[in-house]
Length: 196
Image (cartoon, rainbow, N blue to C red):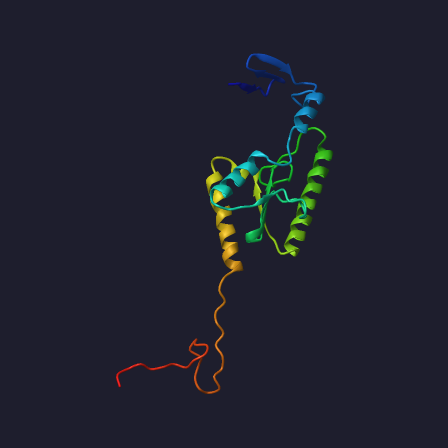
């Protein structure tokens, strides 16, 4: 286990016995190492996507993933239910609740994340215009403390949407021309049965 101690009086970080002078740089890694770390961040098949897909599959839902033919390439498409699910990383998509900007190159990151948010809004609106219901699940909603509740809410919304789409319409009663209301019978009038 690594132990990190930060002192407010010193710009020295103690990391399991190693000392690093932090006075010249905002980042703990060199530019080359930081570039390699950022390049390894995947855009699909991330752990949060995997968690949601595994849960849905175990509950009997079948889906397509990363459908390129739809705006925004949704992470999960449930065609039978008319639902698309985006699973967003809090940093990359600018989640107001817990996203933060890096301390270096702030203008670049602010503009990039703002463009991402605008693109997300545009893609979601296009999907809604096509008749899809759009769900967004944030990475922070899949942390272990709240994961079960989030997955249950996803399933609830899928089922609720399905039932809304196919709910039975109440039968329309026709005017019988002064002979009373229609009883729900289609072809025949009421017949009385009894002893003769």
